[in-house]
Length: 230
Image (cartoon, rainbow, N blue to C red; front, side, top):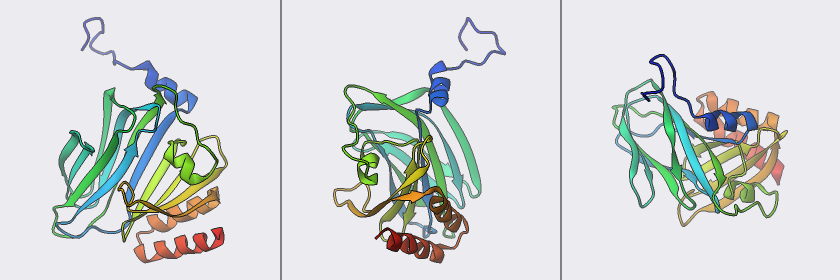
């Protein structure tokens, strides 16, 4: 506790509040849609700091269905968070001061099921980006290009079977969402499978189907929307 603060005073960082007021924040939500088998480790690409920017990471919220061992790390660098999470575990963590990541740094998560039954989880990573030099702006309005430069406030990554991920993202002030489907996300073999602009109602339809805990329905709703995009 700083010596110029009374015991009852909370130390705050005004920049965090400013980011909330101005809508400059970025939330990345990782959702595993399919129960992970016992003993299996899955890797998730969380965020790659875009060209000309730096990332301030301020907190995370975790929710586990079964026991997991989780390792969040910088690719080619160090472990940031590592620990065992109990079943039906809900955990909120705030980082003060924020962790800072520079251009090109890639953050990933390894999650291993150490329980005796299959299970899923979801994690929300919160923070914001700021210019570090001359940031790269989207060359066009396509979802693929906007995602590449981190042009969003909210981003949800729905991890699917067969190394596929459906990504829905948008900016707070916009009335339309971006849809992007990738294979082998976060690897040299990454490939775009589909992209589109979707209505808020279509994004909500995806969310509801995934929240229904019926994995067999997920491919149906995504196929339905993707056929419509064509």
